Length: 305
Ligand SMILES: Nc1ncnc2c1ncn2[C@@H]1O[C@H](COP(=O)(O)OP(=O)(O)OP(=O)(O)O)[C@@H](O)[C@H]1O
Ligand SMILES: [Mg+2]
Image (cartoon, rainbow, N blue to C red; front, side, top):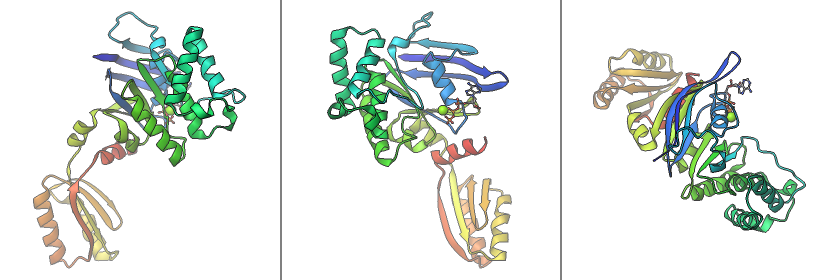
């Protein structure tokens, strides 16, 4: 079932077209990463989905309920740079947020306790937030977003600002949460998405450059690739540079002594390159035949910015 149906969503800030027409669906129960470099439009998109920013045009349908425009009570949202009242304790803060969501007093106590336990802050619940580490603050942010048991959790760069330990804590927490709640989170790191997600949406310059399941996109972007490295001698470097005009080369990325060649047919490319390198006595340092990865696709999308 589709939890969120987004159609041709756009946002302009004056002349700046931050989001230029996004169309996608979010299936219930999935964990989806919104990937993109700085300025791609991730925060703008998430803020529109969270009901915090009015779209310039386009449609958002939540839970297949046509005509329902305010679905915020079913959403949990963690902003890119959350701010807390440092003088409050974690427990006071979550109780405060739960109260704002209109929960009954009895429920507030029960849910606050449950959610602090879920994010692993039960022992720190009575301590002031100003003394929390970055990872603890981010986990408190999760607690705040989850306290009213939302159907969809939207997280804007939940791990970007954390050190490796905090990052690990939050990734593990996300892995648990995704068992129960549909999650959409933004990141500029493909690796984060690969660790926990089913699907990815890749944004660049306000548009979707790619979308689909990780496995289908891996398959789609797998192309034969040959990497050749030579010693830094004039003749060898000239030969390396000449490879870009080989008929079987689709794409050549040649940086000084290393060439990455995307090719049509791995077998014939390998045979031809090895034969020529031997005939011309090219001092090879490395010769690798494999396939390009999702990482290559992502780097390409980002570098086309
Ligand atoms: N309130 C605003 N007024 C004017 N321009 C804005 C505003 N908010 C965002 N933009 C512009 O919209 C574009 C997309 O910004 P956005 O913050 O959505 O990107 P992002 O993908 O979240 O980037 P980052 O990875 O740096 O968080 C940028 O060019 C930004 O300058
Ligand atoms: Mg952002």
